[in-house]
Length: 462
Image (cartoon, rainbow, N blue to C red; front, side, top):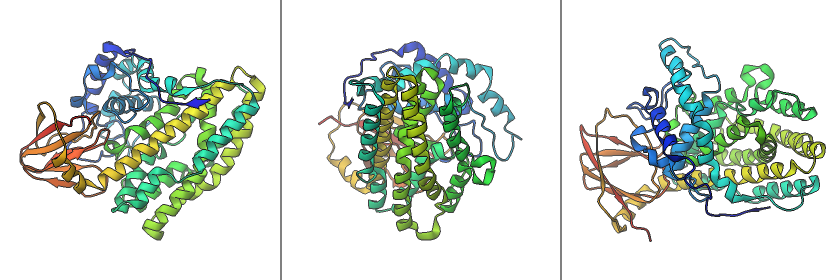
């Protein structure tokens, strides 16, 4: 098996019809956002940035090297919303004042748009995996186990790029919070995708997977549920602990990682691929959380509650053994060589997508930590074509986005705050100020004066 970059063969499979449906979905009042940077305790509303979308965004799927592109971010925000509409989300404070949003989120109009779009959007969002992963060679349990062990050893061989970026940041607290937010995407709804693989009848392997599921849910004790102890970690940092408070700060790589497990779980033809992917994930979680504990203790000492990390560092060693022996290899032995390529593909794809999470988070940490340097780089950048001009007021909805190519952001009139992290101080910019935004970096702009005019200058490719 090889993992290699290639040109995507998916072409324009998504097409304009998909684009029109997605624009109609994103245009719902639920998804237009508000003026606040953080979302309030309403799990049905999240900013899909409809003003930054066009039907043509969904004509050409992102290629293997475009996982942090504007198209990828837009697709995975939509896809994540589609998947969550197939789960039960209820606000902790109750539905008083929110019942209309509940009804709209799960209602027939959005449901029909979702159901008519989800398969095509999945193909659009994950088409690059078909070309990036090649499964070939002998299909035996022995080959599968050897490949799996190699992938796990490779993952454990070096430090996490994202955690290394956090540890090296000038503002380590803000960088650590940015990392926590990427984990919150799954941490506050943990094991929701896994639950879709528990029904049916498939023997001892089903019971093995259920052991992991009930661990995630604290064996029915709410205070021991992993989502509960993740929320406790957020509160220890003085952060909001409700679902999608930090929606505007989820990066494309972490969104794709979370969506990938829903993608496999929604289509049971991909069950064996899911089994490979979840086995890889469980095997690499334990050492990753050990590393996270070390980095966060060095930054915060005992001021941060790392019960969640300690729990996973312990329990995921056990889960790794269960999934390898009682799920991955057991399925290969029971069902034979026809399923081994799918098990292999799941391992390889999970490794690849985990790399997207790491690289995207590391790049965002490094960029947001060096904004003064990117002011200097803006002055040296060579731009091309006319700039995009927009006018903002403090009451406009706040949203975040990224660009496929580098841009220079310039303040033409008024003042603005450039927001790149969930808890760090925004970068204040006045008239005439400019800052380089690299391709794929997530940012939002808030007007700091009654009216602020912005210019976005495309940077000439090198």
